[in-house]
Length: 157
Image (cartoon, rainbow, N blue to C red; front, side, top):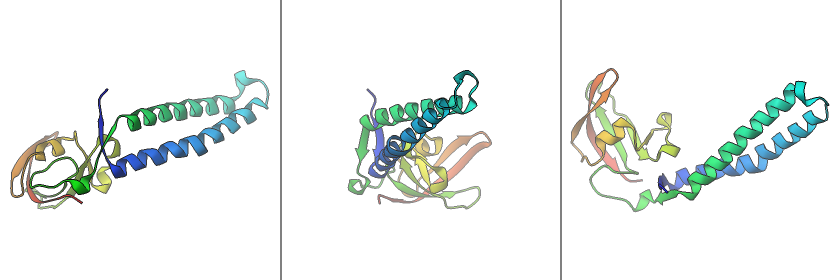
């Protein structure tokens, strides 16, 4: 069984979503199914079929979350350190083409969110910077060609 690396924040997010699905979404869809059944003929009842489809999605997501939580390997980023980029590191980069200075934290796939600067461990950019130190440059192959970055700062927050 493959372990899933997560920060404690990522595990908490999964647990919150699971609780929401079990305590709010699941009972809501069960009520919708019961209400749709009360309308009679189920073969032509669009509300019933929509509610059953939603129930299927919710149950599938609950199973998926329970599996991921059971396989989670929580890594406490506050206890990490060092001068090389690894899981949990927050890295400030210099895009050598545009002079932009994006900041990313390398996190598990399940908690990634590029808009929030949470870069998944398996992303090409993350893989390119793993093991590098402050001042190192590296390249990442993108669909638009190669991009070059320099590591400006590494921290573990």
